[in-house]
Length: 587
Image 1 (cartoon, one colour):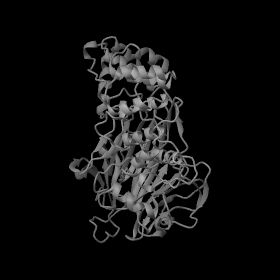
Image 2 (cartoon, rainbow, N blue to C red):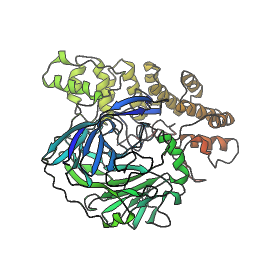
Image 3 (cartoon, rainbow, N blue to C red):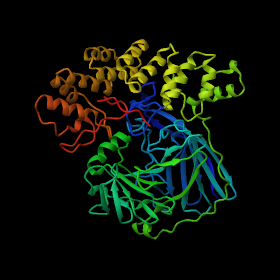
Image 4 (cartoon, helix red, strand yellow):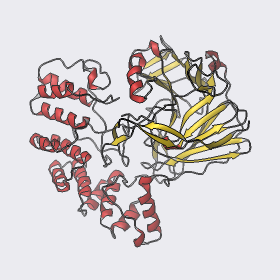
């Protein structure tokens, strides 16, 4: 059987994420800046059926399903030679976590992320578009079949293409990754391929012995394997990075099925090795949150750097290339014995994808075309109330200034783009000329975060005076900084739908106004979403308990946030957190 590629539609139950705000955050204190992207709340229940386009890459040994609608990820990878487990469908054995439903959950950076397949993360992890459609193309060349996925992302303007391929006799899937910076600015980046696998008590992480460092730490080191290698041996969630390994392999073996997933690469080319587990105690809870069939979940990851604390700085015009391989393992011994593949790759360098497939980019692409032709009549309509925020990954200043001379709405777009690019002085000048409420909102943010003039910021917010939830939450945070708690109560009372963010603000307000017992009632009397690496409610709980003279720890698990060590400082939240101080401007 020759290698071939073909369309493969799949219908999946889909839980739709709810947009948290049509406003893209400009100055949130987060590990990864969001602008120009928006973010989401918990997904809707129940799911509805939706059909998605997949590309199938197949030969006599392997079948891979690639999902352009979900960031281009490899959704499924089947080894036809492995035994199909009892109760599972063939052909062969599934090597990945092929989620049977689309069930996003509140994971950073956009608070909408799914556990499924091999996710390609560039320039950050998890990427801003891992749940969005990316560009794709498929073709056959000689006896080899190819699928290419990728895009030019909107935040930095960096371009990536992942080329997946099979030859007629390959027992492995080849992944080539091409990166390029076509912009005039350097771009901070890292690259991680995140392979989700089923996670059970007998799932064993197959990694070479080495020194490792704990996820999120630069100095907490240990030695692998230590006293555990199976999920059932591990208490609590944990991520590890390999520091000094020289082996070709890593992966995860499913002892209950008798097979596993193996990753192979030259460590000089792809040095990053990572594992992630929720641990035996967290597997059941997260299995329910991330799937509809309650299968446990774990991750094995490859990267361009040894840890996710490391980033590159891609200069204008610079490119990078990586090659790695995914395959099945029939035994634990297979990991140690597998050679590095050397497939014959005959395809030329890929054509880069632009932003043509991105709905939110269309107005800006049309604007650039109108500007090139100096055609004012072709300036597209722009509504600042939409979600198509001017992307910082496009060089838009000249076109925006030109358009603003013809259409007033573009003054808001110009000021917003300049602010997001860090040209704060020019942004303020542009926004001083805008009258629409969305422009006043950005001008208020500039007065708050750039000029450090909170009273003027409040004036601009009052001039904006619209009821969009994201704006009202920003307004509440500003009033908290000013200590205007009576006005905060009026703002929070305007919300018709009290999602978790509003309830958190109400609890914070009660602590600030000397009613900590009432704050504790809110915290203990509501069902909170489970959220990873976010500690807003934990912080409020500790302050409220201290105010009533009771022990701050332990923080209840019912608050839905990660466990904190007793007495340790509470990390502040990220995207929509209650800000304790005026943060420094992002760099």
